[in-house]
Length: 329
Image 1: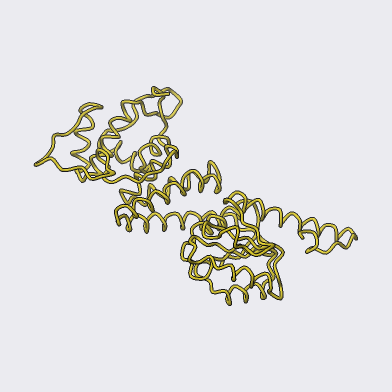
Image 2: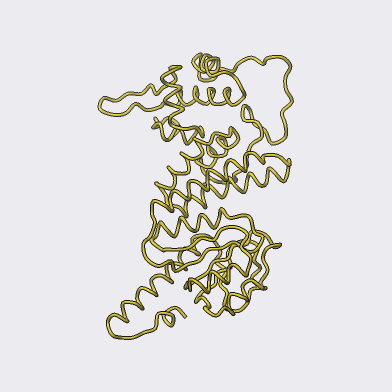
């Protein structure tokens, strides 16, 4: 595996850069793929990858691309001399990368995304997200790529009080990518799910991931977004009559079970109320409220609601007369 030649996309994921950046480095500085098989695209060898690692590391440190390319071309293991005094290495830093974002056991794509985040490289971040969504789907992208990086940014912020700019940039890129997925897979027909953050809850990215995942599997929904007061949520429920309502809470401070109790007492009570997110405690939830353990389970529950309602509609059309709401209770 170590000697395997790689495509441009695979190298971009390894390095955490955009494919367009690789093309630029190739065209301007001669750091392109060296393996060529007639009739096939050129591929990057391990030596090519080593040179590109040097290029990425040096440009991230502020070396000009031309100078970085000069060092990278000299030898795969070339290391430029230190300029001036040797700088102390901060805690949590690696050679060439500055402070790092921990991603646990996540794969190379997550490590590449974390490096792109530290460089504030929005193009590479967005390309990595969309490429992974296209290959693996929204749920796998959230669990294996986005969540590890977002959690790592949060951990590093707690430890250093920094990376606020990184968190803002990554959040915007994630939000835009998820919105693009939702738009491209928009589902016609009535919206059977209502998605809302709890009152004063500002962390909406997981709810946006759920929205994109629902669109991907063909479940129509309405999204209210962050910080929805309970009175506004009840008004939306009474006006639209959703079959299921998802209320997201990221922290204990926003996880007031009274919000869920109010939903269960609404004149147009939804068939299913989901308390999603780590803020909710299972032992405080009102009877009848379901707490999905992760994004995948939330999607599965939503699909079950849709399928039950579809089956009920089909039964009614066939003369059986089974009420749609009874099919899900």
